[in-house]
Image (tube, rainbow, N blue to C red):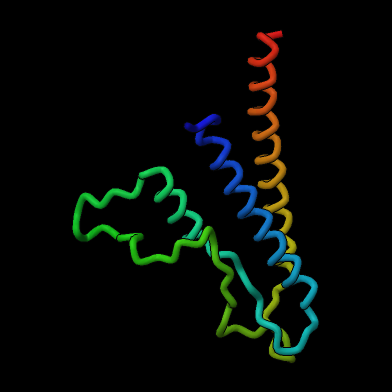
Length: 131
């Protein structure tokens, strides 16, 4: 039995994603001057894969369509960005990009929290009988 709608689990997954993304971005910023450090990023493709699998939305109607079946079952993965160097010490953290990503991620996180609060307020209203 599903006590709450799928919206709660979707919001929970999105909050987990933004939390992990915030951790990775913060780690990149903290290591901006570390020689040889390679920036990391959270892979969205894996998040999309899990959402499609949990909602049943992954239906191949043609053999040429991309299949998600061979993807890992994790919620999301962290990848290291290779092949770039922005600093003379081998570090590839672009501080301006990371700060921009951090600001966007914080806005997204706040929007998700506000949406979750709205869902709880709706439930509270129903429990109180609309008062």
